Image 1 (cartoon, rainbow, N blue to C red):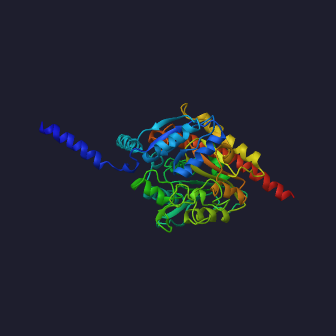
Image 2: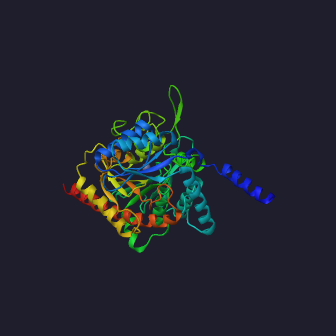
Image 3: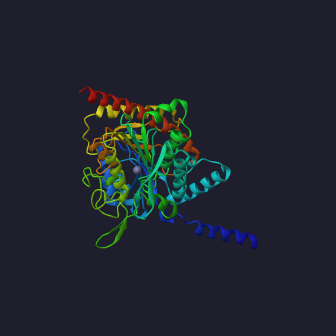
Length: 433
Ligand code: ZN
């Protein structure tokens, strides 16, 4: 009798102690079946009006949106959908429970898989930093570690420059890969680390050209403050950790991928500093985005492709976010399509196929995005890549990380090769004229 009471008591205490995700208690996530563009736009109206958290953008008739709501807004949100005749279903009943269960499963997996590479799990800032330092010190002829500067909270934001010729051969294009501007998109950083591994530590015979003919800049943690905060406090944090002091309150963070200087704060954003997609008080208000801008300008003319990696949804998109297209749109579409196609041939059957296109046409209008800024200053191929979730939203089990790394690497490789062909053709044309 006594023992049973003790067990019950410890179970209750266990629940209280394991409250890491309590802030999401009874938050629910709803799949929303979008019928047309008007439904997509309606969801985005509701996003701002009701302060919703859109986990996945949907595409009408192709892919459902996923929307998280707090319990106090759930009834009103579902009624707003019903009023328009939009079908919906419950994806997650209780987000706190979903993440608690997920953490338990990850811990179990880790205890069984003690030997693993850094890119086979979700490493913390210090682990990523140590890896970058290690690669640079073991391969000084190929890899140089650069500190772009400090984050808002004072962490060093670093990137690797990978080159066989110390970035001095202008006949080579530069490929820039950035991950983790959005803090909760954990599965993105392993892709950057795996790309480093494949280029520097484990270059295979069929990939020699990628190292020989292309210079690479890879930044695995654009937003380290936000990323660490998702580990320690709020798993679903998206923004930077800058303090925005308004008249009445202090709200934290800016959406880094709305903070670039292209149509800034004009489309698809909220000017409420507390909102999830707050673009900041002015363009490049964030140190994190200024570092990317500065890299762009340092190598402008040589940067042929910029790939900003997000999760989730299986998309390769390009600008502009206001639905206009760059002049070389057919080529931009071709490279994106090749990338999606190569990944599709390697994906597991249960994953979605990649959708390719202009981000505004495919999903909805945006402003201040990294992809658009890249295009606006003359980077010929500038993309947003939304990795697959394999149906697990932000809770991708580490068991899938190898698969995502590998399939994405092949996509990156084809995009690099194609973009280089165009780079060489452009240089030859310039030299002949
Ligand atoms: Zn994102």
